[in-house]
Amino acid sequence: MASVIPPGVVLAPECPEIPEEPASVGLPRPQRRSERKPSDRFESINTFIDQTMRGLSHADSLVWLVLWRIARNGAARASYGDLANRIGCHRSTVTKSLRRLREMGLVEVVVRGDQYRGPSTYRLRSEVGA
Image (cartoon, rainbow, N blue to C red; front, side, top):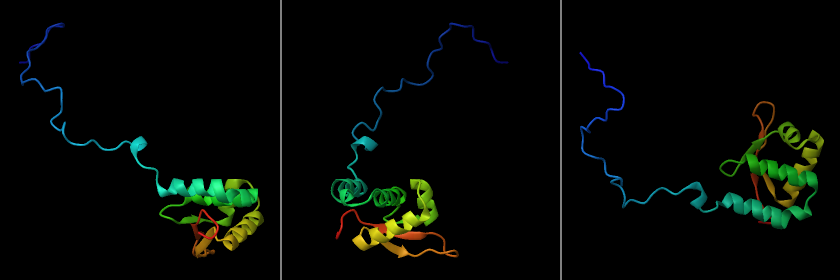
């Protein structure tokens, strides 16, 4: 039968004390997010904002920024309707903006989407002629 321990009683430790320092003191600790180097992704957005954006219309800039935001592994996949909803404009504005961005070399269509294949896939560049 188990005995009941009255309140306030301190039990003696059954195992030796655990050292305050962990055994892996000499091992390097993993880097925190704030200590990592900025990625190429943020270099591209800074280049776009500092150098390229001033030569674009408002809609062109917004379309590029939305594509940059949804890009994964260098490619962004989005439909015209999705882009229009995200930036708050009409599909025809997105069509014109993507045409201008392609002509400037800022957006390259990798896979052209349609009703059966789904949305188009784009590759982005942050500088004109880069």
